[in-house]
Length: 102
Length: 325
Image: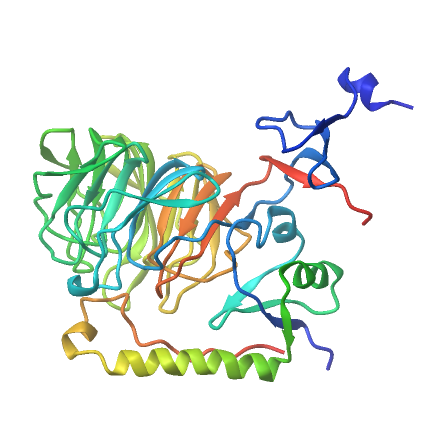
């Protein structure tokens, strides 16, 4: 099956990392660990990866990076005092696993 | 064949930096970048990255009349011992740290502009409120509800509205700050917390989405006319801890969670919500600012993000570079 997405590691430096025209042309999705998902077999996706100096990763390689960050965040959450996990702190949820798509 | 000089009355000019306020259709040569550029009109709304926050955080407050003039303050993660008092100002390119809040807190909400604003509430449940004059925060009378997770609207530090709040499902209250005291106005029809607000004055506000319980995410939207709230068209996707910016007739709702963070963006045109281009980074509890459904900002958010994204809507002017494709 042909893949739908490609993945790279690139650090978002801020203004100009993704410009308006690039965002109009393709869909960008970020994941923990500076992983970016853009369409596969797409000229604009390839140009953007080159522009930001992204390091290409297979889906499995990207998944390992995402898992490592999530696991670290889950361990940090698990070690919090119980009052900081209290129900009223709604935004402080235990991070959930993320599964990347082919 | 029509020529550029024939249409515009001048030749293509050579600039070292892009002109400040080009007209739509204007073409110029950027001698520094060695590229030809044009001021075009967008056909599709989209998010682009803005300057990163200096301090990554979530559950922070935000105000700003446009995406190029915004303020982000406080933040967490909650609860209070880990909360921050940091305030940063955005000029459309970069965030600069300015005077801190007097009281460090997360889950704080703001109303107004980057030169005149109110920050209220937070995770101490004390209703702590402060007024921003463009250079410093001054403590003012506490907001009487003493909550967090409000929606908000308003023009300045003398015209600010805060509605709803935590615990979820129990707060429908609606308080107005006139510069010297808090007044209770008509309650929301649906009590909720962690909602978004939009509106440039307290008499023209929207209350968008939110939560009724830890798992009760809402799509409900209400409109306030200064006297009472009226339920209007729902969001397409229910969520809480989302961002909102704009006016009663032209707003944007973005991000949030249900229960995980989402990247969804919806445009309000005064009669209906329409799903449009997603954020590139799904997140909730960021700082929001903006003018309308063509101009908005989302900065920070859960978990501890530094990311800023700027929304430019369809029909808005944008600089494009000529390429060979």
